[in-house]
Image (spheres, one colour):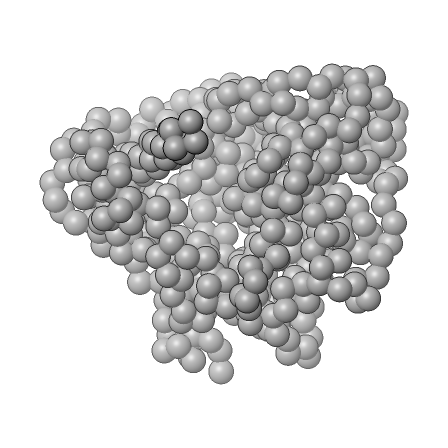
Length: 454
């Protein structure tokens, strides 16, 4: 009996069906992207405090060597993605459109680029606290896009217990096939990483949720699992945004994360499959995160694929290697539903970049641009997976009633999936309104704190 039988065939009732556009890369094996002539490693590739450089300009480093240390608990170190020389430490373009501190590393063309840094360690003999500390040393963060430090998620608040680890293999964003290929090609690493997390967090069972349009991944994981019973692999109906952690918890466990709460509030830990695959590979070797699989795809590319990409690779280089066409007009970091548009092709690939989706002029110009008044159709309300009222929130945003959006209409529960904007017949950019509203509330609270401390 499967979990869907246990819970009455429960599936994601809201959300939207979007064209998955995964045929371009879904069957293509992972290939290595050549090293760029210059790698740009931002010191902030994660939620929390930026890392602190521990190298100097002109210094020679080997692949995998630490080049920046964590700046406190909610921070992670950075490691050299290639053997080469530190060119400089200076600001570099970021995905947010500003400049951020980064380490410029020039790889040596003649180097073998073998990983020369690391040492074996026995995970079985390590305590949960030792595992958490070792996870921080790897620099691993959530590779599904959030880039939250993984070791922080493993450190539960006092008195909190987790009984189940959910492994998120849904990958519901259009175009992206990174997680899909990792599950197909690296199932043993995924399972090893899951067991490491289960030991660190004290969970007795694990469940890997995979959308049912990736049955080859389900079979690969089940084959690697064999007769083991500590982890189950379950197929869930494909629908966007099935991969959101609250949605996955609801479908697989029938539990509801409270408003403003975390999965650990209801005894659940949720981790992305690519994150766990990296832990399963890196932690036993005591090595750091220096590369990740990125889906480089889109109609503006001649050679789309799933590429093992060195962190710090500039977008321009990555697109050139994937056969970028001359009519390139827009580049999305991540999937098109939630990913931001890149403001510059000099922006480097960071730990949280799941995909690079390139569109040509025809693809972009063919979309409707004009915004019409809300017609009160309720489509956004029906689509919202969290049962919010996007129409009402949008009206309040236009009236700049940001505080009311948060206190009375649960603005902060919105995880910006974009379902409301996708179904809106008036082309109202609702999710953009909500992002601005959240930022305005953050700035207001910062001013209030500053005034209270003055």
